[in-house]
Length: 107
Image 1 (cartoon, one colour):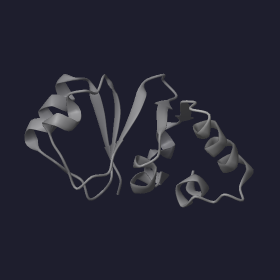
Image 2: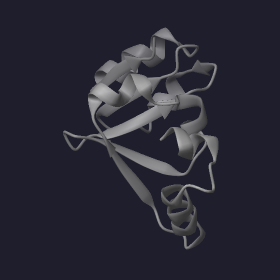
Image 3: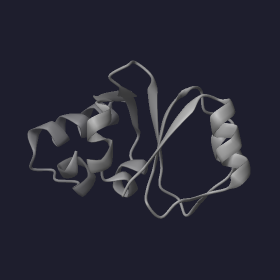
């Protein structure tokens, strides 16, 4: 994941992902919850990737400075990973709870 976030083109796995994107393929990566704290969220948030946890629920990544209600509304139940610097508004936090999103903040 770090090599992908860094854009290491010499890595064969990263090159294969970039080729898939060139062909217009949607790429989903399965990750375990124990790996959530180690993910480079800021870098991964800008890539056209879908994440799924081991339990089959989607994993959403938010790395912007402030996350509000409008960021949470389109999300279905799943896991929401927040970079350590993200400010989650009170309304967004309430909406996340209503939508069944489990919040994870990086340390």
